[in-house]
Length: 370
Image 1: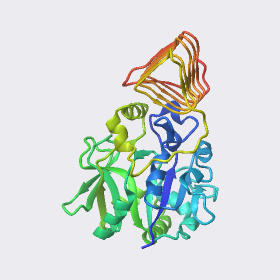
Image 2: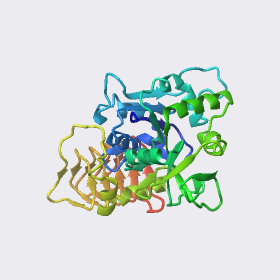
Image 3: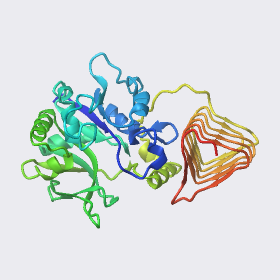
Image 4: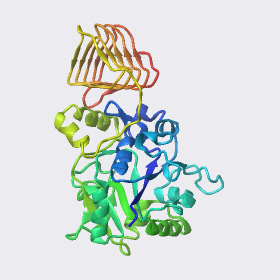
């Protein structure tokens, strides 16, 4: 055995994230005060000893490109292997559907030359929009122990009806895969799959030959009878960021110490992009209570139950509560914010009042002045 190779899919999805994906894809959404969502899967891979990772990108990828760079922050900047950024549909313009992300198998077919040069015996496929701290080395060990052709990570915690769900038999084998069911039952798929590199190449070639593009439809459903597909059940923290409400709820959960302890496990550290910024300043006359504050913030007003990214300024007399403020947000004197998410470089004018609700937070687009 020669370890695993990581493949991360970063592409546009039709979700309810509105302003948060106006300039970015899901994986590059800021999360937790000092991270992007993609950092979690990258860290899972690095913690499992993975040294080669390919990121298949589609859509508004500039933010992801800027964030990942050479991969140096994750020790993936290497002369051989390391991090490779793969624009899935840059290879051609004449194929039917070129430019559209129809499915993972088609995207993998577009980078087949890259796949053919993978040095490792196994590969892990995953999406970039999942916040999770998963022991991928344990998943590989379970995959080898059971002799499965494919091991899919899933959870017993149910989600939306639009998610994919598995039915497992007593031996842990997936016997049914469904989506868009009225009442979700079974195990929710987390879109993390481990298989041999040889099998992946064979599946990609077969799907390309038959114009099949969906991993769920062409592999999990159509080939379930001929492949042994096992389920690895993970009931720890796993948050798929697909709506504003989910983003807000999952972010605010991090203000609870037990939730932070579960996600930011010391044995498997989450690694973010290295940023040089001065320490944050909290004025003696200001107030900061139960909040996550990144470096470079200047807090002179009142901040309660908030998550502040780098370079946020809260002036004297301003009150911010139950809010998530992205990089470079400025809250002027006398402003009052409740249940608000601001994208980068937003300015809230003096004495302004913005009120959202916990179940429907107010979102302010990037570079806005309100």
